[in-house]
Image (cartoon, rainbow, N blue to C red; front, side, top):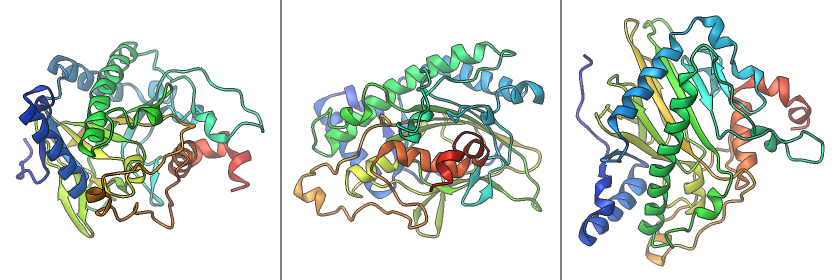
Length: 340
């Protein structure tokens, strides 16, 4: 067993949302404080059945245990929609390879026709790739996507209340065709002489990320510049973090915090299942009018000049995907990237 370090991120008991008026008020206050001060927290009592959690982790391990040729049949380089499998070292963060195997799916929709008249980001909509050698994967992940969407939407609406906005304030951005994304991730062990970049330092681009961890450490959060805090695995919880959409929408009142994963040692591996709740691709993020006391604390979104935040949701998502997956960019977006 890995040695557990003390918890250093807030723990939010989601059961309080349906408790007494006093409990609900305490939850909303805790949410606002955690998102403002850290941008990361643990979510306990989230309502997802443990049997489903166990099944998701089991089927994820079964996928990564498939023969390489089976996984490569559904490699992401086949998909203009950025869906499918990547070998460790294929995805790029901050110009360095991430040493993690991963399998990505999104909302199952028909691909839109490609033409010079439509924006390039519309190509991200489309079907998933599913491995024929593991048919259970589609069944389990489809249910996981549905269950996690329910939790994430409740949390998003709780954030709206915590900001003293209408409960459905963000629903228009979420829209009828939201960007719901699952990523299965396996971090293989690495020696001390090898790069330990499981995934490089970055922010997430959507509304919220809910991460299911196994018992292996590795996730680190930069709550203060240059200081990295371990998000120690907490059984029965998800690690939740704020995405760039909420940072933009609140003029920086809520924080999209930089985080990374350090690869495990040679004899170990780490398994994570990430769920990303995002907005409809054609949405444009407004700045919501917060109460004066909150608005006075907002200092504007923290935008990296090398990776500027865009309020046009589709372009912001596509920018990140093209940067992270140059093989997909070269194959399916060459006509677009040559003019960038």
